[in-house]
Length: 129
Image 1 (cartoon, rainbow, N blue to C red):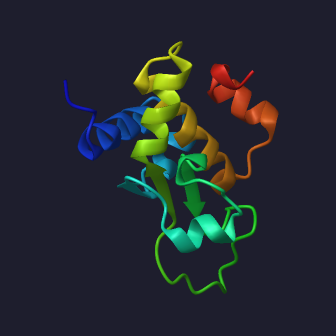
Image 2 (image 1 turned 90 degrees about the horizontal axis):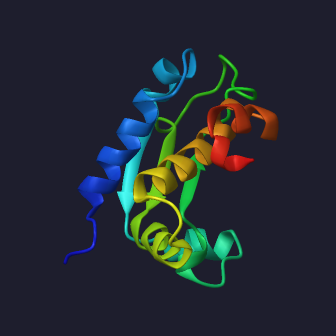
């Protein structure tokens, strides 16, 4: 049996976006999704991660609550999902589906983009509670 590949993780992430309530669904489709096995070493170092398995996802951009029309973006907002740490957590947990975990990581990263509180996250992702 082969481990789920990046294409499957990306498909699950897109399915999670489609399941978001409006008005978030439409806004979330404008965020670029990137799937990599691990975060880059410089990212892990900057975040103080001791292991590449410590980081399952990352939001890269300016949160909507901080954006200004005078901002000159260098690239679109991005959400990175890191396949190997996600799979590792999924196997270790053993109590959630891979789809649930990918959705959970995605919603957590979307929270950074939208500026959601913990209560906002809990309304969208009941697993957060």
